Amino acid sequence: MRTVIGIALAVIAVVIAAVMVAGCAVWSSANVNTVGERQFEQELSIPPLLEPRIDGAGRKIFDLDLQQGRAELLPGTTAETWGINGPHLGPTLRAERDDRVTVKIDNALPEATTIHWHGMHLPAEADGGPHQMIEPGERWSPSWTIDQPAASLWYHPHLMGKTADHVYRGLAGMFLLDDPEASALPLPSEYGVDDIPLIIQDKRLDDDGRLDSSQSMISPIGRLGDEILVNGTHDPYVEVADRLVRLRLLNASTARIYDIGFADGREFDLIGTDGGLLEAPERISRIQLSVGERAEIVVELEAGEEAVLRSFEPELGTNAFEGRFAGADDSFDLLELRADEKLDDPPDLPAKLVAQEGPHESEANGVRRFELGNRDINGVQMDMARIDEVVEVGATEVWEVENTSGTPHNFHVHDVRFRVIDYAGEPPPAHLSGLKDTVYVPPGETVRLATAFEDYADPSIPYMFHCHILEHEDRGMMGQFVVVEPGERPAHGEPGHNHAEDHR
Ligand code: C2O
Ligand code: CU
Ligand code: CU
Image (cartoon, rainbow, N blue to C red; front, top):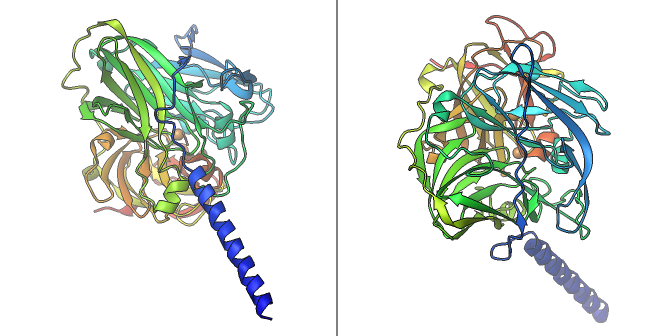
């Protein structure tokens, strides 16, 4: 008997030890760190600027072809990818305030998808959310008028359940907006030369350099990649010939959150966020970007030097365990900037940038509350047949967003730009002081936003609000709102439970 118990205990001890070893392996393999390991061997690719056609009425027409292709994500290998007007990623679209634009999108992919204009103020029927599917072989041609300040926006698929997959395969691009006030400022603005778009994405690639689409069993935010591509380039460098260089940073990943700065800790100027330029440059040394967020920064270089853009361990506000599997301990070298031996010497940055209009809390007609749960918002998951929120056109509202879970989430609202009133009980930090359309919401914290719904009433087609961590969105962490004329009801759809509470 004794020996039987002894053997059993020994077996249990061995099993516990094995589980602990395996656990440690999982724990340590969840940590990715490429700092100091990169050689910066590939020249950064710059997405081409797409020249529009101008039709007889002066409208800018852009043609986008969604297609399958092959791309060299890792040098010397081939991956099957999706792209727009090319095998991987898409061209940069560019338009000016008051331009009338039409985008003709032809879907040559084997699957239906959509293209959404992230950050764009436009009618719901042109928004490109899950209600505007483009079947294989079909064309979708939304038209609208650009009616917002200069900003760095982007476009990507936005369909039910498969947004993460379609973005991961390579469907994403930038959409830059200009306006006369911004264009008159002495800012670096030569596209791809001293004004460089950086589409930052993490990928998991197998030994043959193919995209690994397997799901993560442990990560609370979904698959995290261990390779970073910038504009689709692995291990990139870029040569620059100006003392001041503007970088338009876009986090177009599916889940990963970056805290971006320079390897040598140098400061730089933040000049713009999601919704456009700030009132004045803000001197900072780090900018954290959750999925979907953008920032425009200007960095100063010395002749002949190399400056490495790095992503440091992001502050997610989770516990250590959640954080480890959500990328909180990960760091990456992103890009090496190589300055010429002789640099052009542009004027210093202006002390003031643009005057900001924008919603203020004092103008608000009401408050709406949003609770971000584990995979739901206000206790429900996305239902295309339900309208969650009804907003009257012309209203200014406070949206109060609380992350009641222990998981990282962010919050994005279509159609509008918002101002962060307070962030986790504090006034917004510098990098959240401008106009935004996407904001990180740490576990247990509340973020209050002021936003105005100025026009485009449409009782039948909703806009979306959601967590932009794409696997969360795909699993239902999204809701719908319609903008209606005062007193109007949504045309169809079950009404949701939530109306703005009177503020005063
Ligand atoms: Cu970047 Cu709802 O979208
Ligand atoms: Cu959007
Ligand atoms: Cu989320």
